[in-house]
Image (cartoon, rainbow, N blue to C red; front, side, top):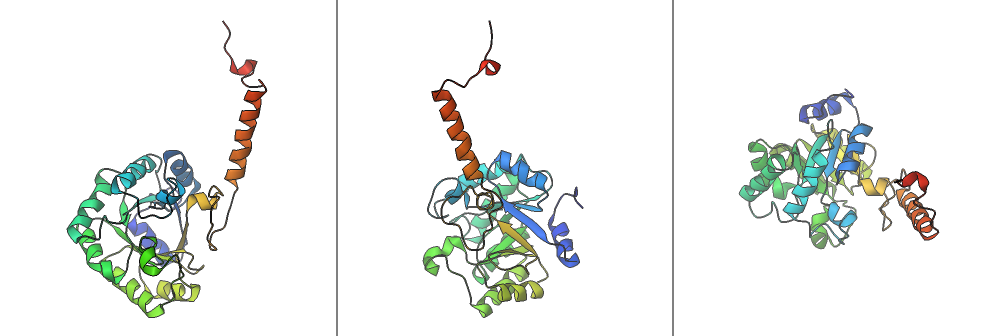
Length: 265
């Protein structure tokens, strides 16, 4: 299975067999290649690019053109993992027809195999329309960052009945998977047990069918606020600063370039 191209059917089989799905975000070619080679099953080009790469304070300003650009360059580094493009705010809320048009761009122009969009019962018709067009859809319920103003900020979602209803609705509408974000672990466990499609958790406990993190959080590149559910597996920001300081110091002291970095006559 390690070399098998990951598809919707592979993910469904993993849930059935109880094998955990590993997912990460990526936003450019070098990291996409490393993430894919690490053995992850799914790579999401998230609209989180707006915050971790572009310096925005939320995901709301991210455009379709930005998402297509980043998904396209990520696709060049991905061989095995399933590549999912995140539909940004405003790209699917107007009508199902608009949503299908924009979802198709991810497959036609950017090389994605699926799209992700936020919302539960309210976007069921949209999920149904995109799926009917032959485009796999990953749903996203719980804490949905595109709705931070309606939610009053980044808050854990605890309404069990609503969350279970949303999960059932997106599955019935045709979603192949659902991201559970910012949901108490016991509720996420109930959702995972009830659904036949895989659940991918982020801040939703260990009993989801899989887990996803933002790459820059995992690697310690994000030096801003880090959510409670994030575990840093490295500190690349520190290593990068040390390397940069070394370069600046050696140039100032005329230690770089040395003879081994210079050309003779």
